[in-house]
Image (cartoon, rainbow, N blue to C red; front, side):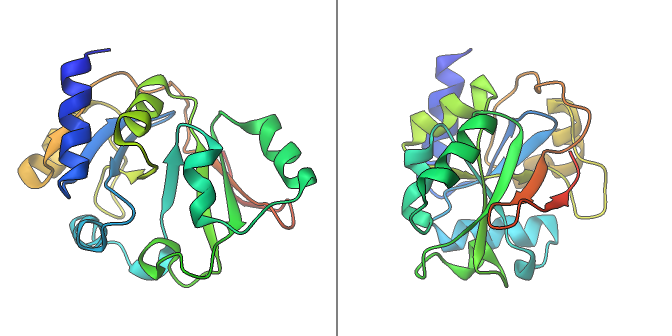
Length: 185
Protein backbone atom coordinates (compact mmCIF):
# COMPACT_ATOMS: atom_id res chain seq x y z
CA UNK A 1 0.00 0.00 0.00
CA UNK A 2 1.41 3.37 -1.01
CA UNK A 3 1.15 5.59 2.08
CA UNK A 4 1.80 8.77 0.08
CA UNK A 5 -1.19 8.10 -2.16
CA UNK A 6 -3.30 7.15 0.85
CA UNK A 7 -2.46 10.41 2.62
CA UNK A 8 -3.16 12.39 -0.58
CA UNK A 9 -6.59 10.74 -0.86
CA UNK A 10 -7.37 11.50 2.80
CA UNK A 11 -6.32 15.15 2.27
CA UNK A 12 -8.62 15.35 -0.77
CA UNK A 13 -11.55 14.05 1.31
CA UNK A 14 -10.83 16.45 4.17
CA UNK A 15 -10.73 19.39 1.75
CA UNK A 16 -14.15 18.50 0.33
CA UNK A 17 -12.96 16.58 -2.71
CA UNK A 18 -14.29 13.54 -4.52
CA UNK A 19 -12.13 10.44 -4.66
CA UNK A 20 -12.24 7.04 -6.32
CA UNK A 21 -10.85 3.96 -4.58
CA UNK A 22 -11.09 0.16 -4.81
CA UNK A 23 -13.68 -1.75 -2.78
CA UNK A 24 -14.74 -5.38 -2.51
CA UNK A 25 -16.19 -5.58 -6.04
CA UNK A 26 -15.78 -2.30 -7.91
CA UNK A 27 -14.20 1.12 -7.58
CA UNK A 28 -16.07 3.37 -5.21
CA UNK A 29 -16.70 7.07 -5.59
CA UNK A 30 -16.60 8.80 -2.25
CA UNK A 31 -16.35 11.89 -0.12
CA UNK A 32 -16.84 13.11 3.44
CA UNK A 33 -20.44 12.19 4.35
CA UNK A 34 -20.77 15.28 6.57
CA UNK A 35 -19.84 17.67 3.76
CA UNK A 36 -23.13 18.50 2.02
CA UNK A 37 -21.43 20.36 -0.82
CA UNK A 38 -19.19 17.37 -1.58
CA UNK A 39 -22.09 14.90 -1.43
CA UNK A 40 -24.22 17.05 -3.73
CA UNK A 41 -21.29 17.33 -6.15
CA UNK A 42 -20.95 13.53 -6.09
CA UNK A 43 -24.67 13.06 -6.78
CA UNK A 44 -24.54 15.55 -9.66
CA UNK A 45 -21.46 13.87 -11.16
CA UNK A 46 -23.09 10.44 -11.04
CA UNK A 47 -26.43 11.84 -12.21
CA UNK A 48 -27.96 10.03 -9.24
CA UNK A 49 -31.21 11.01 -7.57
CA UNK A 50 -30.69 12.24 -3.99
CA UNK A 51 -33.87 10.32 -3.07
CA UNK A 52 -32.03 6.98 -3.41
CA UNK A 53 -29.69 7.49 -0.47
CA UNK A 54 -26.05 6.46 -0.30
CA UNK A 55 -23.86 3.82 1.34
CA UNK A 56 -21.28 4.67 3.98
CA UNK A 57 -18.26 2.43 4.45
CA UNK A 58 -16.08 2.43 7.54
CA UNK A 59 -13.04 0.77 9.04
CA UNK A 60 -15.06 -0.22 12.13
CA UNK A 61 -18.51 0.16 13.64
CA UNK A 62 -17.44 3.07 15.86
CA UNK A 63 -17.09 5.25 12.73
CA UNK A 64 -20.70 4.51 11.75
CA UNK A 65 -22.32 4.73 15.20
CA UNK A 66 -22.87 8.55 15.21
CA UNK A 67 -25.14 8.21 12.17
CA UNK A 68 -27.25 5.32 13.53
CA UNK A 69 -29.89 4.64 16.15
CA UNK A 70 -28.58 2.61 19.11
CA UNK A 71 -28.55 -1.12 18.41
CA UNK A 72 -29.52 -4.07 20.57
CA UNK A 73 -27.05 -6.80 21.51
CA UNK A 74 -28.82 -9.08 19.04
CA UNK A 75 -28.33 -6.49 16.27
CA UNK A 76 -24.63 -6.19 17.08
CA UNK A 77 -24.31 -9.98 17.04
CA UNK A 78 -25.99 -10.19 13.62
CA UNK A 79 -23.64 -7.55 12.21
CA UNK A 80 -20.56 -9.14 13.77
CA UNK A 81 -21.11 -12.30 11.75
CA UNK A 82 -20.88 -10.34 8.48
CA UNK A 83 -18.37 -7.56 9.28
CA UNK A 84 -15.84 -6.72 8.20
CA UNK A 85 -17.03 -8.01 4.90
CA UNK A 86 -18.99 -7.42 1.70
CA UNK A 87 -22.33 -7.03 3.46
CA UNK A 88 -24.21 -3.74 3.53
CA UNK A 89 -26.99 -3.26 6.06
CA UNK A 90 -29.89 -0.81 6.21
CA UNK A 91 -29.97 0.40 9.80
CA UNK A 92 -32.32 2.99 11.34
CA UNK A 93 -30.61 6.37 11.13
CA UNK A 94 -30.31 9.00 13.83
CA UNK A 95 -32.93 11.70 13.35
CA UNK A 96 -30.21 14.24 12.54
CA UNK A 97 -28.57 12.07 9.86
CA UNK A 98 -28.72 14.28 6.77
CA UNK A 99 -31.24 13.51 4.04
CA UNK A 100 -28.43 13.90 1.51
CA UNK A 101 -27.14 10.57 2.91
CA UNK A 102 -30.30 8.61 3.65
CA UNK A 103 -32.45 9.93 0.80
CA UNK A 104 -36.16 9.34 1.30
CA UNK A 105 -35.59 6.64 3.93
CA UNK A 106 -35.37 6.48 7.72
CA UNK A 107 -32.47 4.04 7.40
CA UNK A 108 -28.88 4.41 6.30
CA UNK A 109 -26.97 1.86 4.23
CA UNK A 110 -23.68 1.05 5.98
CA UNK A 111 -20.81 -1.42 5.74
CA UNK A 112 -17.63 -2.15 7.67
CA UNK A 113 -15.41 -2.90 4.72
CA UNK A 114 -13.06 -5.85 4.48
CA UNK A 115 -11.10 -4.23 1.66
CA UNK A 116 -7.71 -3.34 3.20
CA UNK A 117 -7.15 -0.17 1.16
CA UNK A 118 -10.70 1.13 1.66
CA UNK A 119 -10.46 0.44 5.40
CA UNK A 120 -7.05 2.16 5.59
CA UNK A 121 -8.55 5.16 3.78
CA UNK A 122 -11.38 5.38 6.33
CA UNK A 123 -8.83 5.20 9.16
CA UNK A 124 -6.69 7.90 7.51
CA UNK A 125 -9.74 10.16 7.18
CA UNK A 126 -10.88 9.41 10.73
CA UNK A 127 -14.49 8.85 9.65
CA UNK A 128 -16.62 6.81 7.24
CA UNK A 129 -16.80 7.59 3.54
CA UNK A 130 -19.65 7.82 1.10
CA UNK A 131 -19.26 4.79 -1.15
CA UNK A 132 -21.16 4.54 -4.40
CA UNK A 133 -19.94 2.91 -7.57
CA UNK A 134 -17.52 5.04 -9.60
CA UNK A 135 -19.61 5.40 -12.73
CA UNK A 136 -22.44 7.42 -14.20
CA UNK A 137 -25.87 6.06 -13.27
CA UNK A 138 -26.91 3.36 -15.69
CA UNK A 139 -23.37 2.65 -16.89
CA UNK A 140 -21.26 -0.35 -15.82
CA UNK A 141 -19.26 0.22 -12.63
CA UNK A 142 -15.50 0.68 -12.96
CA UNK A 143 -13.42 -2.32 -11.90
CA UNK A 144 -9.98 -0.76 -12.43
CA UNK A 145 -8.32 2.65 -12.16
CA UNK A 146 -8.16 3.05 -15.95
CA UNK A 147 -11.92 2.52 -16.24
CA UNK A 148 -12.46 5.22 -13.58
CA UNK A 149 -10.30 7.67 -15.55
CA UNK A 150 -12.04 6.85 -18.82
CA UNK A 151 -15.48 7.40 -17.36
CA UNK A 152 -14.99 10.18 -14.80
CA UNK A 153 -11.80 11.82 -16.07
CA UNK A 154 -10.77 14.93 -14.22
CA UNK A 155 -14.17 15.29 -12.51
CA UNK A 156 -12.68 13.58 -9.45
CA UNK A 157 -10.00 15.13 -7.27
CA UNK A 158 -8.02 12.00 -6.43
CA UNK A 159 -7.77 8.43 -7.63
CA UNK A 160 -6.38 5.86 -5.19
CA UNK A 161 -5.29 2.94 -7.39
CA UNK A 162 -5.28 -0.66 -6.27
CA UNK A 163 -6.95 -3.98 -6.91
CA UNK A 164 -10.58 -4.53 -6.04
CA UNK A 165 -11.43 -7.36 -3.70
CA UNK A 166 -12.42 -9.63 -6.58
CA UNK A 167 -16.12 -9.99 -5.78
CA UNK A 168 -18.10 -10.52 -8.97
CA UNK A 169 -21.12 -8.46 -7.90
CA UNK A 170 -21.81 -5.41 -5.74
CA UNK A 171 -22.32 -6.09 -2.05
CA UNK A 172 -25.52 -7.59 -0.78
CA UNK A 173 -27.83 -5.17 1.05
CA UNK A 174 -30.13 -6.37 3.84
CA UNK A 175 -32.52 -4.59 6.17
CA UNK A 176 -31.37 -5.11 9.76
CA UNK A 177 -34.92 -4.84 11.10
CA UNK A 178 -36.37 -7.60 8.92
CA UNK A 179 -33.36 -9.50 7.57
CA UNK A 180 -34.89 -9.06 4.09
CA UNK A 181 -32.49 -8.87 1.17
CA UNK A 182 -32.90 -5.57 -0.68
CA UNK A 183 -30.14 -6.15 -3.23
CA UNK A 184 -28.51 -9.46 -4.10
CA UNK A 185 -24.82 -9.97 -3.57
